[in-house]
Image (tube, rainbow, N blue to C red; front, side):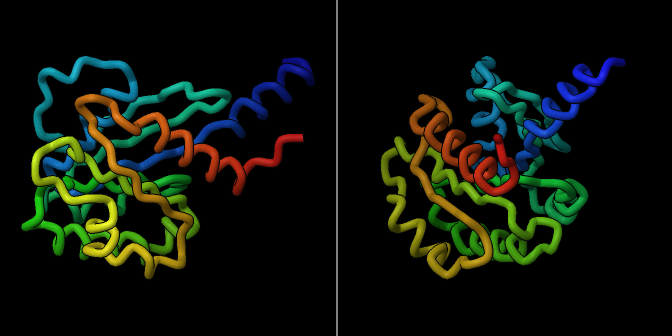
Length: 184
């Protein structure tokens, strides 16, 4: 392999990001990933393990890992932490009764050493449903302002309509790239 070809391969490898999508069960993680990838979302079933998609986004290659959120699967989340550049935490904005669980699980995640420094995007999904909590209400319920260990942003979204999904991914990718890539 020629020197230029090797440099090109190295450069392509550098422009890859590993994104982990987590949240409680039924928050909309799989729907978000499928919608962002342009896939059909008419039949979604609970994720019993994980889904992996590689998506080209601008000049980057995003390796997205969507991991099931059932209580019985959460202890396995740590198996997916290694080399994570960005974490998307999906919250069901219409599920008020599980906000304490959501907060507790997020607190555990941001203390994980392997996720240290990962950019955190909180998608307040199902924002289009009647009775859904606002971004400010979710911010307060999850005590997001106390997070000082990660760059983070919360954004209302709808996986079904794709509202704000692209804006969120753009923010995530831009934040990660400003931290880990130096493009000369």
